[in-house]
Figure 1 (tube, rainbow, N blue to C red):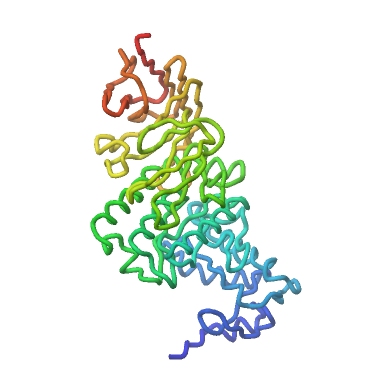
Figure 2 (figure 1 turned 30 degrees about the vertical axis):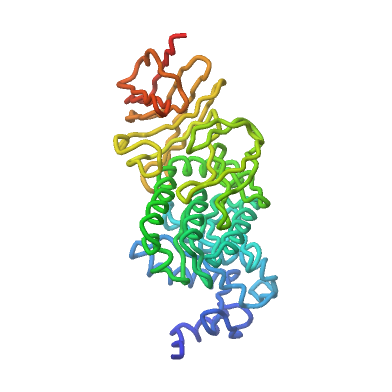
Length: 428
């Protein structure tokens, strides 16, 4: 069935609002024209079209690579531009429009793409969608490569399209390993055209897959306070939430305190080297290992390489026990997970206020020598602190309640307040 001609088609050609002097080009949706985003009048006209959408409360757009189909050289109102030089006019215009309309608005677009190189500007991309991969192991590996290159270029929030989008569909194991890697990026995006309502649904693969996928998804959800806080930091200082990328062994850190290595084959036995500095606690076993240690380990389907740096202070939102951290008793509390070290740890927590971009800063510190936990925040909150690998204390002073788990060597402390100091007495 032929595509219907848009009512404004002739208008934009007549007013010279399009690139390449109005020459029609073929792209993946058929034939069409690309708006000339170097032309201020064209941008004004386009924004008026977008106003018809934002009036209904839509303040986010996916900006998806249409420009690459209009030639290596694009003829614009300011002269010929390379396709690469033209792209920022397109992406940035959409970003500026939506953020001017609403501060919490944003765009999702490609950062680095194997299909076309650099797409959106580093400074004006809300969320980096690395997409159009197969659901196979090779698709996962290529997506990791794209995400790591995006992070190295300074894109703050690269995200993973779980299960890929086109061609090969994910098997059960491929989908779960995809999800576990995705949980350790800015956002888990569920693809795609390659079986979106079959193999992308974990329950399509059975109960085990459902439980493993749920675990990864809940872990990602519970880490949102940490992810948000880390994103604020990189927004202010530059860089990416995905740090210390190692493309050869497919590993990275999320922020400063979480290390992960992707599993990208059907072989559950994987070898890798931990991040070099500090010491790291295995998320699953709680074993503490020196940085730089080479690990060779078999991971069942419900586990993957994940380590927390000792000295870490990680804010979380825990409402259940699906991820393996805490349980439903912590719902409604601001949970702070601490992996003590011998020194003093200081953390500036940029706590999100609602679903937007507003936040407040809470300063949290833990002195591993003196066993003193300090919080300084602007408002009273119900806190739940989880300290790993701790000896049973004799007393915990100035708290509402505390409990100790002998099996896991985990100390939980409950305290409601805004600014306070807690002393843990081990009787030594």
